[in-house]
Amino acid sequence: MQSLSPSRPQLVYLAFGPSTYHQEACFSIVSALAHLDAAAGEAIDIQVFTDNPQPYDQLPVTVHLLDEATRQAWNQPHGYHFRSKHVLMRQVLQQHPLAVLIDTDTFFRTSPLRLFQRVKSGTLLCNAFGGRYGENQKCLLYKNLLTILQDRGLADCQMPLVNSGVIGLTADDAGILEHSIAMMDEFHPLARAAYTLEEFCLAVAAYRTLALAECTDVIHHYWSRKAQFRAKIQAWLRKHGHQPLSAAALADVLLVNDQLPRPPTLQRLGYKALSMTMPSRERQFARELLYGSYPYPNEFDRACAPAWWDKALQNLNERYGRMEPEQLRQCLRHPGLRLSLGARRKDIEAHLLRASQP
Image 1 (cartoon, one colour):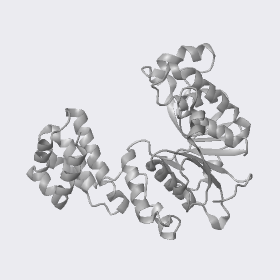
Image 2: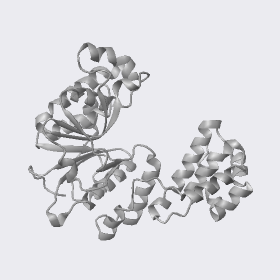
Image 3: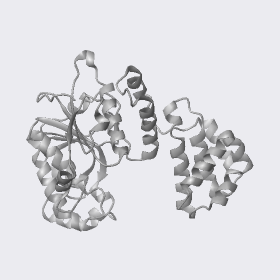
Image 4: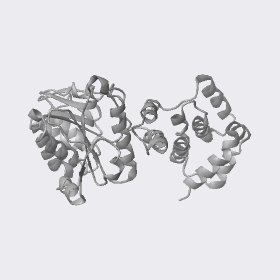
């Protein structure tokens, strides 16, 4: 644990539920610490609001136990769980002049102080910009809310959308959180199925009021291909979870990179040629299995193999319907694929047969 300093930047996490989210948060925190230059006096406060303090025991963070009743209260009146992000951020800014709330599925590319350099009065820091409101007119948020927002002068088709994997604000601008919370409460019944309602309301609250800044160069937010990045992080935790701040652990943080592992170009061409000998419906499946099975030099890239195999099977089933176990066995025993997979074929077959169980 560490004591908070009102003068230091506040990096805030909200982590609750299954262990996966705590694993993500722990790695994100360690990645922030790994990129701090302690010799130059760089320091931040890290606050974790969580239902499970245990995963953070070995980390220099301030843990706030978040009981279920409090979290549910933060999600009312509709039980919308992303509402709690804005409620928490508003609470932190009542005590500190500046804060950054960051999702757990993130890790740092560089010093976290670069985030706080972009949090200024009159500016909303978000993870990334996401196009313009009017670009997707089939979206539920467009179809159900455009007229209301236009009539009130709150938004138009040119409003930039934001990704709220990072929210950075000064206390002077905390009022936009009141606005965003009020809109979530009002618009949730009109856009109940809209997963991105929270960040949409944040964009509306900031529109024409605050400048926008993004931080994709500082943060990798792996909302896409999440299984592969979680596999990398879990491999790091298996290796270093008992001493997450050791020199070896901090050095290995840099090997958990933001790239999906891909074999070299010539190897990929070879895989493509091999797949052309297989039935057309199995070609992409075979290539994805081979991508996962390639002996990558980076140990954390190699750890993605089961995630690649799972994704390959998921993609195949989504395109052509669920593959029966005997069909799966026959595919994996195709002479070319069997030769290419080598000794791993039996492990892959066992893994996928387990995964294909209804």
